[in-house]
Length: 245
Image 1 (cartoon, rainbow, N blue to C red):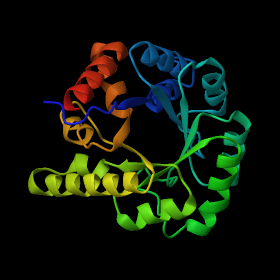
Image 2: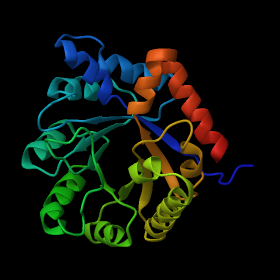
Image 3: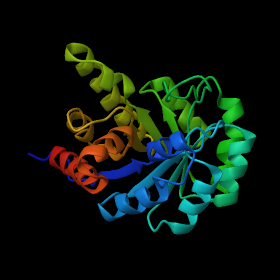
Image 4: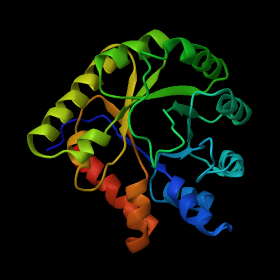
């Protein structure tokens, strides 16, 4: 039985297509081609994280995505002057500010918006002035929701990594945290997204959280595409999300 009639968008992160490409230093596989295929399969948007060390997505990829996509581009970026300049140059539909450490393999947790509010404020303001929809990638924590409200961020993306790693009662408790945070953000006029570590097997309980409007999923879909193709992996994820609503 559907728990919510509100549509739930799927953003497909194509970073790890670029990871495979960069392992050989050539031009293939092309993340822009992957983005276009994902769009044909039903993705509502494309997410790409331009990291400081350019370990996967490159500046040229962002330029090509900006020029070639007909669905929204969500640029994941650290809160730095360099990344702000990139965002202001390309003006993607959205920019999601994420924490970034050079030594991490992937994003390890949410942004400390509460502790970094003074540093984040001018970046959020500059992006909003340029017409870029700002999102903050945060933990499902009331303090972080309050910080997003104070910063004037129109969107938060809740980190689902802990939920994905847990099981049993611990997972259920984390799911409640996600649901409570989503409700609090929505109550205060913030659009709520979620992502990190989501798979066919664990996506349904998150997708069923009524205030959620978008899930961003990448690594799992790219991994599945090795076996079934990107079109099939995206379509199956959409089906799982829609069944949960």
